[in-house]
Length: 251
Image 1: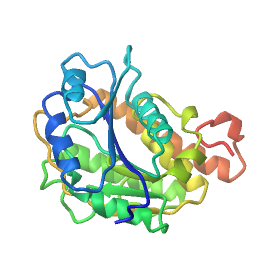
Image 2: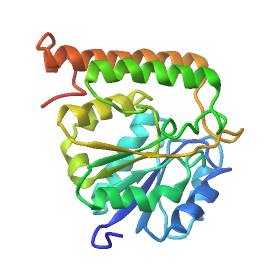
Image 3: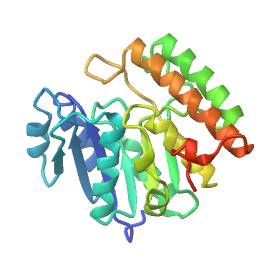
Image 4: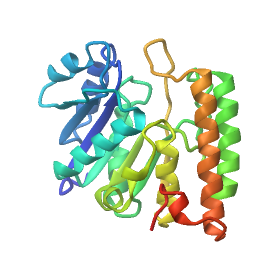
């Protein structure tokens, strides 16, 4: 383990009171994390109260709901302010296993990668873990198109389990990104735009009643947002679109 690096796990939380403690305990049991930051996006349950009871956790609560992307912006800002060298974002709904944190930390700490994604697709665990078939098909179709438009070979663009170097987070103009779910895709587009290497690691996931999930209507909106991000990326690379019209990718 790269103990000369400060590792901070950030958890963008929304109505995660039932699973937050379990996720936190497994994160800390890895012995690879220096601090945990929980940002509660104005939950309607006891997420903040549960977070404040976690040993040594740093808790920040939005007075108003800013959205998934807005939550992540707060997470990364706070992590950098706390001096993080490596930042790992894991959802507090216990859908993604924190057991991979040491591996992801090592991959960033080696200096070979500035971004590592926990992929539900690599290894073929998504459906076995309970991913709804329609979400699996949508994931694969979107990823296929995105890879073509952004000239990449990722197994998926839609995982909520990600690790970043400090250098990368300071480089990316994430403040220009959406406050909604498409934030994740815009961030990956930015990483590819600036020619940073992205690594992937196979990640088994669990789908259950308490795990967060967006509904069909929000999923459709998200899907079109992803396609718009990829298309804008390609048009900008080809010189057919000014970067000023696509602020998510701005040099």
